[in-house]
Image (tube, rainbow, N blue to C red; front, top):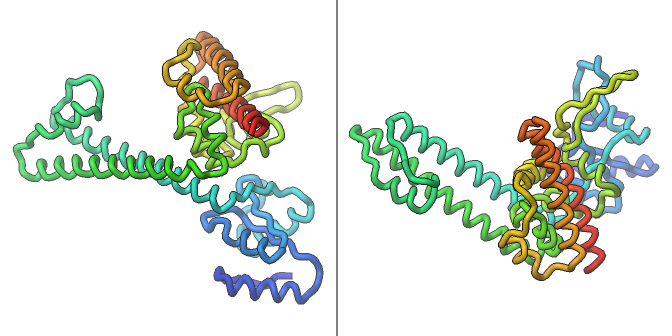
Length: 339
């Protein structure tokens, strides 16, 4: 039975529910995860109705099916739901979604700041104005940016606007980072955020992004399940006796995957106890500190072995990030057990 297009307002959904309930039988609502968020799922579950949000990328499709319409998509979801071939996604709680949005806003601000810095440096490079100091965007570099003067007034206006944009976006990033730290402290997963910082390379931003995107890591039954959800497992094409592994699938959460790959680059040096890690581990149980040290010894050694085999640094970072996710799950489980 096809009912045609349905409006997107609450009153439209309520009318649809009343119409379907009048026909008798249990109702199960299924829709694809997308930019409209989780309000529909929460609205339906509050009414005691079954609702499933599925991952669009994991919906089975026939290779030869080249026709896509709303009606065919709805019929496909209904058929696959009856057969149990749909993969549901984890719908976050309201508080978890709020922290996730704040973490993503901070990430967007960082991307905007880097874009503004790139434009400013490109303008200076085109005019052969070079900074000879040690570190870009340090306090000394920012003072140096007040000196260049372009002879054409039009170029000077562009330069000043680019500098102002960098300043404004730096302040925006600082505001969002401060807000993220403030609102993360009363969050239900903040103890796990603190515990994850026992790991090398996993500072506050990496820990908060990972948990905000993935939620409770203990919901994954096995480490490979977490690695699959992150898209860090290698793709595979096996036929007969021939087995071929390719690049990572990238089928999971891109925000958490990028954060973990950046954290994995910290393991390119030998295992050691730095000045920052003991400060982050000061209030943590010994079992968590032991897991963090085992992770550092294993991942540092694996990084160096892969590098000696001639693997590309990006490939190594993805491999280390995959195992790092497993250690993060172990710490989350240990934190739950000690709470």
